[in-house]
Length: 431
Ligand SMILES: *Cc1c(COP(=O)(O)O)cnc(C)c1O
Image (cartoon, rainbow, N blue to C red; front, side, top):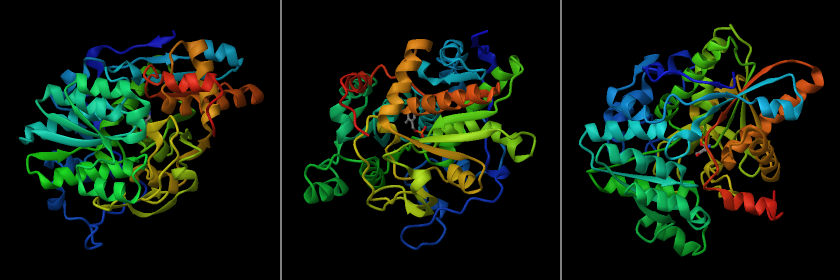
């Protein structure tokens, strides 16, 4: 069986919250003004109460609201696919499975959290959400979600991506959002950066500063973040919970779980539900987060408190970071150009429960093309990081003869990233 499906009524009814199960508690976010643990009251200027509660909740299972399940059912459950053609091509005894999140209307895993975030904000009477986007995956997901709940979405898009990826901007506008290249002249944060460097290509950190600034200054406006935070990883656990049911149908359990890691949400979404058995000592599954060589947050970053944005508006979070003023090179996997890593993933990495690998841009496109020529699906450049390491692990199985079960997250399709593929074919990509 190549494609393992679930019925619509098998969409999980709860998200899995790993906070009560972590080997040691997460360090609290700190208030940037006092350096003391953040007062949740202060977060209400940015987030609805329901999400602030989820951010700190010690409940293991959190019910998914009916309204959210209804929107999820447009594309969920997503298929789990056995990569039989890739296995044949690699001549490996490994069994490779991928969870395909690219079938969501915006083309990635990101609407799994955009939909509940828009829902909880609307329920609290919020009319407008600001956010940042790199490659446009997050902005388009929030634009898509906003429409269902009557929310106007304004997206600060990293300037280099705004120029490299015009189609995602059109997609956001199709779903009714307003898109602004960042750094922009419309916020104090943007103006400050443009004064120092008019050609600044932008970064997620800068775009976050602009979006947060606007939300702080307008009472009917909240801010929405597409990765990193605990509640985002929580919402993404629908991926791993579904994958677990699907693998159980074919009586398999993964030996290796792989995901690309930008802020850690698609990796966490797939991995955390399987971490339950690893933490209880019932499995020895390996978890591998794959990051770009040019933005090596886990493999080269420090584990310390840092800001989530460039200017320093956000609470300080204990995480692996390259420094909040780090501006990564303009690689094509725009969704992986973030200086920090989710505190949950950082903690698990620090505890030795997950591994991290950094891979180069040309290697990931080579893997992506092999994948497209065997499995048919053209991966997003971000997802291609996971494809690359899944292939490497499958080749290792060929060498050792071990029939391991490899599961990876194909977090999105690359049909709006074909310029990057074109550059790869023309030999114009650099590492
Ligand atoms: C945004 C994005 C990522 C990286 O973000 P995470 O929060 O680390 O998941 C990976 N893949 C795709 C397709 C994305 O859009």
